[in-house]
Figure 1: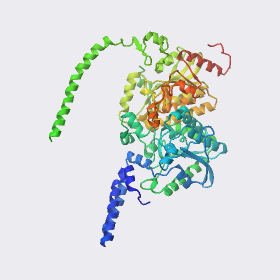
Figure 2: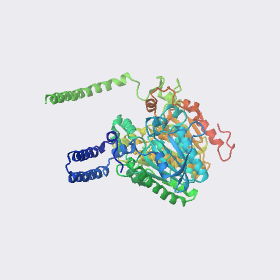
Figure 3: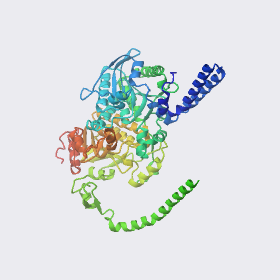
Figure 4: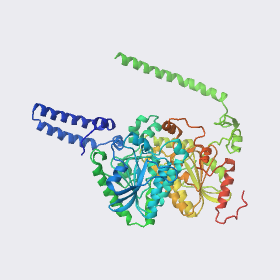
Length: 335
Length: 303
């Protein structure tokens, strides 16, 4: 596990970790006192470390959906480019939609997974404020979705499997995005992804928000990191629409069933990829290894299928999603 | 202690006010019929304020005779206006929403929507004829849950698309929706993928899909099947877009022009094939169906 740096900032983002930070501070203080005053606190320190481990277990094994939402959004959380560099080799980044612009909220290109050429594409959040502004905080404009589509169509043409990383609060809500037909850009990706004759594997690595996430999400397999979230609208957005109060996001996070566990139960995702204790940002390299393992396993399975079988498999997966009741005519009197 | 006491007393005043108000409300209600237009007899245009007889308005296909504003139609009104009389046969009429997330208040709200609209969910689908041409037709209704798309809407559209594929019939969908139904969260989001995948299959095999945007079509409906027509038509003045005006204004910190996200705005930006007045809708649809009929030109005499 990485040393806990920047505790103060983190405690703002992840308030549920505060008790751990407090205890760590006390341990460090006691250790310092021991050194300064030459008192032997070995037993006490051992007990405190023991307690720390217990507390850690308690906190991380009982994360509420709201806590998970905060973890999914923590600013140190590894991004698409981090995973591209850790999971794949020989990455060649490509740019642009060939029509309008190069939307930096989407990154992608060619790379090798265990030596096999694939196309990889994903949402890219910024690492700092400047980067975030350039990348529109990972929220694509239509040209971003069209850029992603161009890469994926290329993969389909050359028979390369497609891997997508999903990490966005949603499509960019701006006037220029609307003027260039945000709706069509998203819809077109859903349509085209359904027809690809190559394996498509999607991984939700952080926040999967709305149509902007789904536009990279029509895969034969959809995997999700343990502390990632995926929903129709951000919990903040839902809270402001439903209860006219965006600060009730935590409450909305509970109600909306946004965690990997919930989505697995609904049959929306195939697999939950475990995270290191405390979240993916604690050990990106270990996280990347487990992502790589899962991708490879699913790719092997999918590679056994023909193009037609892959299309059919994807269709069946999405066709089956939804919960409704079908009344028998006797049960329902038409008004 | 004293503070608490006073605060409590302050609260105690509120029920007195509330007690007083029912009388007031009742007296207002008594007066209302005298002051306002008789319910149902006349209608006020929400755009220009013109008051017209309901019968006149209905004769005019619910289009304001003064400013041309297209009033919203519910599913059955639109079916009556568009589909040849006596030809519409509803399918999947008995699909109803469940509450998979046990979302607070959802069940109750569903019941209210049914009570208000007489519909079981936000879309009616079926087979009918338009200008003599058979088609699978789906019509969304804004008066049920703001036309939002949950599992039932997604399923009914997917079934309609599959039926059109099986019977080799054209598909027409009239959209109106506030977007995805939040109360079904991820399941409603996935209906976007489900309907689009079904359309991909259908259109890839040569199926004809005509999409008609009506006021308003936003969010997840606009960003899935509604935008995927071989022909995308819209009624005049219809609000069409992905993100809502308020969200966009907050993001860009600017006021948007009044015509933003209207059918005319979208036409100008290359997003629609045609904006069609309600009185011309049926004849345009008939012409399009005619030009795609298996025996081309045979029925070219249709209006």
